[in-house]
Length: 101
Image: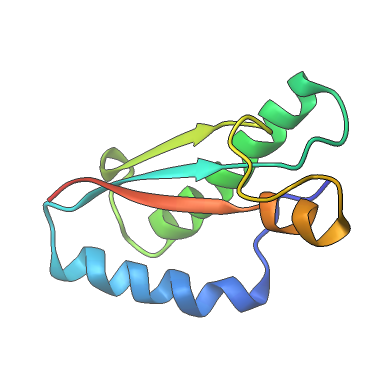
């Protein structure tokens, strides 16, 4: 089970860094998610680690940690069926929401 950032994500994250630099009051929540394979407790930990990986990238680029909330939801909020590999892949994700700006 993986929670390291994929190189393909870094371009998008760099856009987010630029947006947050331009909007110093912007606060975000990063939500980590998993498919339904494995133990619920492990998936919760994995999903939180996914969110924390994104947060660490952002803080490493100079964004204040106080502007970022990381949450893990495990397999509780699927966006697709876990009955197919494609669905499971879609459920293994990290999402971003604006908390305030």
